[in-house]
Image 1 (cartoon, rainbow, N blue to C red):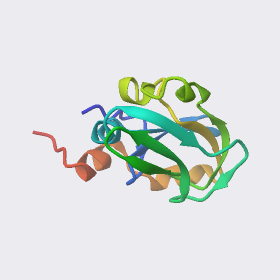
Image 2: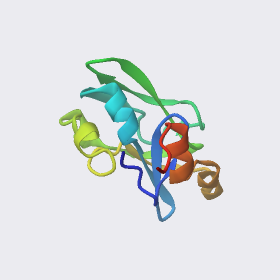
Image 3: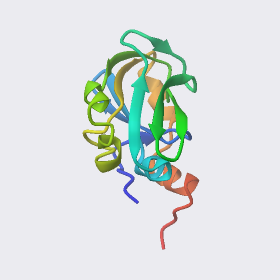
Length: 129
């Protein structure tokens, strides 16, 4: 299970990558595997303010439709428009081309409240050894 060490993770299976004063947000490999093949991604519009834990969009797969939750208090800067054409990028490259959106956090320190890679691995039941 790929869980990059340079990212932070929410308990709702989103990952966050710090990019200067912005954050790039996506769903984890664990989450996309649980969903199955993604058929549609709908995200909050640009300049939408979303509180941590609140819905920022929806993701649909053959198995289920589920809500996507914002990992930190933030304003949406850029939804990944490519997902409208190729939603399966979430499956094939969840930490790369399959990112969901870029956001401006209300406080940069909020990232520190998220799980590190080891804590996320423990959350999903993976342990060393």
